[in-house]
Amino acid sequence: MGRPVRVAVMGLGQRGLQHLKSLWSLRDEGVVQIVGLADAFVENLAPGKIAQYVPDYAPEGIATDASVHVVMRDAAPDALFVAIPPGVHAGEVVAAAEAGVHLMVEKPMSLFLDEAVDMERAIEDSGAIATAGFQQRYSPRNEAVRDFLADKRVVMVNVVHNGALENHSIKHTPTDRLDGPRNRVWTASMEWSGASVVEAGIHQVDLMRYWCGDIEWVEANYAHRDASDIEDGGDNPYAYRVAYGFEGGAIGSLIMSRLRKAYYNDGYQGITWTHGHVKFEGRDAVAYYYEGPYPPEQRPSAEQLRHVLPAAAGEDPTTGLARAFVEAVATGSDAGLRSTFAGSMNSLSAVLGANISDHLGGERVYLADLTRADRYAQFRRRPGPAAA
Ligand SMILES: NC(=O)c1ccc[n+]([C@@H]2O[C@H](COP(=O)([O-])OP(=O)(O)OC[C@H]3O[C@@H](n4cnc5c(N)ncnc54)[C@H](O)[C@@H]3O)[C@@H](O)[C@H]2O)c1
Image (cartoon, rainbow, N blue to C red):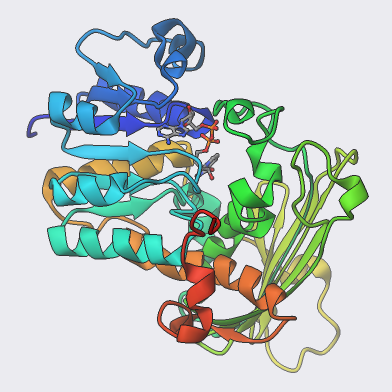
């Protein structure tokens, strides 16, 4: 085995701490060395606070600073995990790629397509190994569904997710000091999160792609929140209906709601191929299809049709993602990654495209046009300061 991969983490909030915990277990295996931590709000770098989330954490030998540029200079990491709110990037991913640092960038990689394209280009130009935070691809049951569908023609995928606007309990960015929500639940705010379809729905969209291939177009309509029902900047829409068309010909829908004061979650994920469908029952992925002589003499029973898909035992998906990424860095090959940064751009376009479609009254938006057509230029760029 070669030397451990030197890793730094930027953003030690909810997600960065989860990554650090996974990386700490890989450190115990000798495959990773944690060399630096950066967070603009240095109270989030306090060893006592980090140890509440990473019980064995020890700060010795780890460079820390508010600036990721200082950490990259002092710690010379091979790889950087970036886990900051998606609207606050300021060129760090591009700078890291240009410095030859490999990258794991949390989803959504940006709220602005132009910025994400700049990141993608810098990564490609530098040859850096790069991935995005789609750990659900490393869940054994999601992998089992992918393997099962690999030789089938998928025709439809449907995801319903009803959730609470207040869902995320512990956020660590002091948005109260940045003219953002006082309660720090920035995921409820359109400006900070880009809408729930972007912040949370992107995981579902990325799984759809893991199972069904790339998305070609999107049409979306949202039920926007009444002004009288907005509290503390929590203005994300009540409800989202998003239709997708896949390059392989399948159609899909993502239905989401985010109600305030409701505190109730439920959901459904179902994939239909030409001769059956797959859905989740408890922890199992289950396929319903008939495989006997056709036509059957009598209607098959539900037990005859029900097939639990075999799923391997696996480690938690966040550790699975970190392991695949550091192995890719160590070997110089991204073949073991279940998504690259470039490969994740279709998921990002599909959710940012949903916002654009809704804004344009539900019109069909082709994702290939989104990154280049003049018609969409105003939606791609980060809004500048208002003219004086
Ligand atoms: N993959 C997943 O399942 C998953 C889960 C949660 C969050 N996320 C994503 O991770 C990212 C971070 O979310 P979070 O929940 O950790 O948020 P958070 O607010 O809890 O933490 C963000 C951290 O970044 C720091 N930070 C904020 N602005 C910064 C800046 N400009 N420079 C440096 N540090 C800065 C904050 O101090 C905080 O410690 C988001 O993109 C989010 O969508 C992914």
